[in-house]
Length: 387
Image (cartoon, rainbow, N blue to C red; front, side):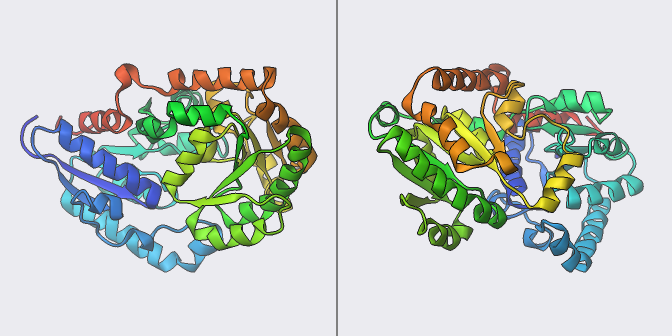
């Protein structure tokens, strides 16, 4: 195909904005002529010369109550986005994560432009809960770009759209995650460093910080001296600092992504809330114990909806429960400390986790070590209706 391609990218929150920025760079690198771009994005996409229809903050809303509170704005922005896509008649529409917003756009665009290819960059977690969503995507999604290697098989099993694994963006950051020889020496030396990650949401932090503080006190009785580093989410810095004051052993609280990754490169083990951070730790080669606590109401709902035997991403990728997890009533200081102690001290439990972590690389890397954004861009360009 020659000439300019018109591509519309629609992101709905910061994580999608970051993916969109990398995708823009890859699309330009693979296109004979610079593609014409339009849609919705944030600061990272703007840094690539992308002009958003409106500020991404207008639609970056999570949770039922916040969505209800801003329903009129959201509906207006959905209509504006759909009208703009229809007016532009692009060659491909790429929706990026944030299914509450982006799927609403895609379903309406499909009704008005039934022949427009629509690519969904980031699969909803249909493998974990509400699996019927996979089949429900078929009428308005032509291809799903998956970040996790088990997701294509999940969509096939659940009757979802065609799905390709394009790699997780963390693969592009392995150099930041892997320790230097000096950092590896710290990881293996004395006193060891324990990384503590109490979550990124306020509710997670409030529930886990007291438990983690008592766990550290128990762990000290079992393994002797160690250092504690706690990478704090910037927006909850004050809350974390306030809750850490009650700990018997005070952590060194660090801020920012660079400091977080520096902690990972030195850490001998980690105590972490379930979430993407467990994948970051896994790719850093840090053995971990994973914990999670939610409200009683959320627990009842989760037990009805969650379809997987583990909530830990590395375990899902490995298809085995290699990283121990303690949820709800099992999330006690004594159990967490008992399981952390052999990971800090060394021995069979630590070696077993390190062996499992070593397999994650081969499961997540793409053929030829292709970058995820480039793999995604190839599929987007191949989806063009005029290709």
